[in-house]
Amino acid sequence: MKRERFEHLVEEALEKIPKKFTKLFDNITVQVKDRAPQDVHKQTGISHHSLILGTYHGVPYKHRGPYYGNIPPDVITIYQKSIEDICISEEDVKNKIREVVLHEVGHYFGLKEKDLKDIERR
Image 1 (cartoon, rainbow, N blue to C red):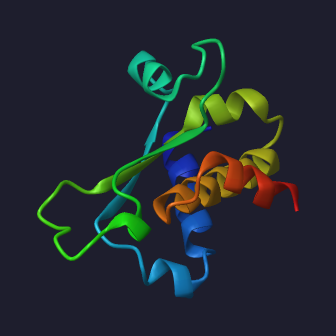
Image 2: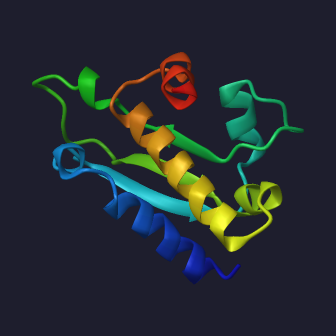
Protein backbone atom coordinates (compact mmCIF):
# COMPACT_ATOMS: atom_id res chain seq x y z
CA MET A 1 0.00 0.00 0.00
CA LYS A 2 1.28 3.46 -0.80
CA ARG A 3 2.34 5.53 2.20
CA GLU A 4 -0.13 8.29 1.36
CA ARG A 5 -3.07 5.84 1.50
CA PHE A 6 -1.82 4.29 4.74
CA GLU A 7 -1.45 7.74 6.34
CA HIS A 8 -4.98 8.60 5.23
CA LEU A 9 -6.26 5.46 7.02
CA VAL A 10 -4.39 6.53 10.17
CA GLU A 11 -6.02 9.97 9.93
CA GLU A 12 -9.43 8.33 9.53
CA ALA A 13 -8.84 6.22 12.64
CA LEU A 14 -7.89 9.33 14.61
CA GLU A 15 -10.99 11.18 13.38
CA LYS A 16 -13.22 8.37 14.69
CA ILE A 17 -11.99 8.78 18.25
CA PRO A 18 -14.74 10.48 20.27
CA LYS A 19 -14.32 14.23 20.72
CA LYS A 20 -14.46 13.90 24.52
CA PHE A 21 -11.03 12.26 24.21
CA THR A 22 -9.49 14.18 21.30
CA LYS A 23 -10.24 17.51 22.98
CA LEU A 24 -7.73 16.37 25.64
CA PHE A 25 -4.96 15.83 23.09
CA ASP A 26 -2.16 18.22 23.89
CA ASN A 27 1.41 18.30 22.62
CA ILE A 28 1.14 15.06 20.67
CA THR A 29 2.02 14.05 17.15
CA VAL A 30 1.31 10.92 15.12
CA GLN A 31 3.74 9.59 12.56
CA VAL A 32 4.04 6.59 10.25
CA LYS A 33 7.26 4.65 9.73
CA ASP A 34 7.99 1.34 8.03
CA ARG A 35 9.11 -0.76 11.01
CA ALA A 36 10.27 -0.31 14.58
CA PRO A 37 14.05 0.13 14.74
CA GLN A 38 16.19 -2.11 16.94
CA ASP A 39 16.44 0.48 19.73
CA VAL A 40 12.64 0.39 20.10
CA HIS A 41 12.80 -3.39 20.46
CA LYS A 42 15.44 -2.96 23.17
CA GLN A 43 13.50 -0.23 25.00
CA THR A 44 10.30 -2.27 25.03
CA GLY A 45 11.93 -5.61 25.72
CA ILE A 46 10.14 -7.08 22.70
CA SER A 47 12.18 -9.57 20.69
CA HIS A 48 13.51 -8.32 17.36
CA HIS A 49 11.74 -11.36 15.86
CA SER A 50 8.36 -9.95 16.94
CA LEU A 51 6.45 -7.29 15.09
CA ILE A 52 5.82 -4.00 16.84
CA LEU A 53 2.77 -2.39 15.26
CA GLY A 54 2.83 0.91 17.12
CA THR A 55 4.49 2.78 19.95
CA TYR A 56 3.81 5.69 22.26
CA HIS A 57 6.60 7.78 23.68
CA GLY A 58 5.99 10.68 26.02
CA VAL A 59 4.49 11.81 29.30
CA PRO A 60 1.04 10.24 29.70
CA TYR A 61 -1.77 12.75 30.07
CA LYS A 62 -2.71 11.60 33.57
CA HIS A 63 0.87 12.16 34.78
CA ARG A 64 1.13 15.75 33.59
CA GLY A 65 1.18 18.21 36.43
CA PRO A 66 1.11 21.98 36.72
CA TYR A 67 4.76 22.22 35.64
CA TYR A 68 4.30 20.24 32.45
CA GLY A 69 5.33 22.23 29.42
CA ASN A 70 8.11 23.40 27.20
CA ILE A 71 9.03 19.86 26.17
CA PRO A 72 9.01 18.05 22.82
CA PRO A 73 5.68 16.54 21.79
CA ASP A 74 4.65 13.02 22.70
CA VAL A 75 4.85 10.74 19.67
CA ILE A 76 2.60 7.92 18.53
CA THR A 77 4.29 5.93 15.77
CA ILE A 78 2.38 3.49 13.59
CA TYR A 79 4.53 0.95 11.73
CA GLN A 80 3.13 0.43 8.25
CA LYS A 81 5.14 -2.57 7.01
CA SER A 82 4.61 -4.45 10.28
CA ILE A 83 0.85 -3.97 10.03
CA GLU A 84 0.83 -4.95 6.36
CA ASP A 85 2.79 -8.12 7.21
CA ILE A 86 -0.09 -9.47 9.29
CA CYS A 87 -3.00 -8.31 7.11
CA ILE A 88 -4.36 -9.88 3.96
CA SER A 89 -6.60 -7.11 2.63
CA GLU A 90 -7.00 -3.36 2.75
CA GLU A 91 -9.98 -3.85 5.05
CA ASP A 92 -7.76 -5.85 7.43
CA VAL A 93 -5.17 -3.06 7.30
CA LYS A 94 -7.85 -0.46 8.06
CA ASN A 95 -9.16 -2.45 11.04
CA LYS A 96 -5.67 -3.13 12.40
CA ILE A 97 -4.73 0.56 12.10
CA ARG A 98 -7.80 1.51 14.09
CA GLU A 99 -6.94 -1.07 16.76
CA VAL A 100 -3.31 0.06 17.00
CA VAL A 101 -4.18 3.77 17.03
CA LEU A 102 -6.68 3.21 19.86
CA HIS A 103 -4.11 1.12 21.75
CA GLU A 104 -1.44 3.82 21.53
CA VAL A 105 -3.94 6.57 22.40
CA GLY A 106 -4.73 4.48 25.48
CA HIS A 107 -1.05 4.73 26.43
CA TYR A 108 -1.26 8.51 25.93
CA PHE A 109 -4.01 8.56 28.56
CA GLY A 110 -1.85 6.50 30.91
CA LEU A 111 -3.22 3.00 30.45
CA LYS A 112 -0.73 0.17 30.91
CA GLU A 113 -0.36 -2.83 28.59
CA LYS A 114 -2.35 -5.08 30.96
CA ASP A 115 -5.22 -2.57 31.13
CA LEU A 116 -5.32 -2.29 27.34
CA LYS A 117 -5.27 -6.07 26.87
CA ASP A 118 -8.19 -6.38 29.31
CA ILE A 119 -10.15 -3.74 27.38
CA GLU A 120 -9.37 -5.38 24.03
CA ARG A 121 -10.71 -8.74 25.28
CA ARG A 122 -14.13 -7.25 26.08
